[in-house]
Length: 322
Image (tube, rainbow, N blue to C red):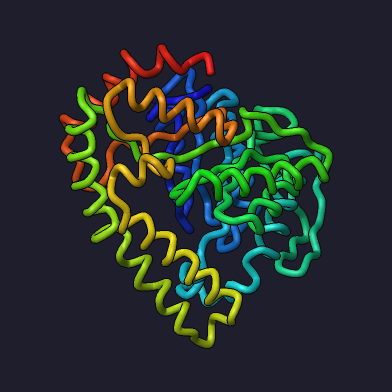
């Protein structure tokens, strides 16, 4: 099981991941660099393919290329209908996969993208192409991810049973497309705080989550409420997606720390408590990777450093072999 807080770059952007990723290729030597990830339907897929290929070369083949579809309100600024998001995502991914693996220049005439000639440089270091990661928040998106040779990532999960159902759907879809995924293909994102005692960790996490939901996530919730109300950009399906997103955030916001631990949505407590929580994630979801976010909201830096040290010294030795 891979568990560390520094083997990925968590970004969700309509801009290039190139600057941050390029810097990390020069400051790290062995860890994988997961760019999580480009909001692909709103970007030029040829440019994304070439930038990711360059990062793979610069890192010596350590790139994990992350792609996200986004949520409805992110499309407003670009005057793109969210109804097109999945079609754009599918076509863009197929362009990128072909750009990475096709040795000769090729043209593309699709529904959303048209190119006379595609021939990227450099080619990716990894063969046949860099590892891919895509996010899934429901069974529909999980089935979509299963169409591609990709890892699946779940973040801000509301319940372990719901997450398990999403993963089962992804596995079924992947098998239907000729793949047999294992634990190494599953990543779970978890807000994390480790202290000497449960009580101390719960106190710090409660304050940090209050800021996270009350301040950092408020713009997203407000934007999604606009989606729910309905505008010329959004039809009924997108309104339902927006409502699901808001309800999920509201559920997480209203739970106590103990309720969130029981639901499996955070890792929080003493080293022994977090070890039990990680083992539960592994048993319930079969996850081979956990992306731990230890700098959450207003979490004091000294608490973050201590949390990372406790993870390194007392948690990792107990769970490394899972």
